[in-house]
Length: 66
Image (tube, rainbow, N blue to C red; front, side, top):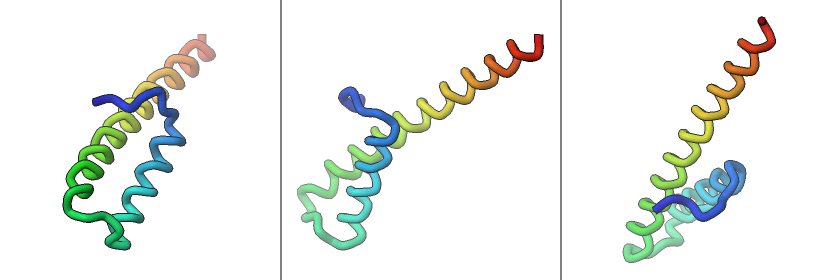
């Protein structure tokens, strides 16, 4: 269940929005499970994006040293 064409910024904003609803007890029990699953998918996406970006930056810096 990968995020549908979502940017890193949009993923973080959605995570924040869901967490705020959880903290404010705005979600009922039926929604809670789905939202927690969604947050886990978004966090995985963000972590992968950060690792990929870090690798790309490291490669660029290595190329600059040559």
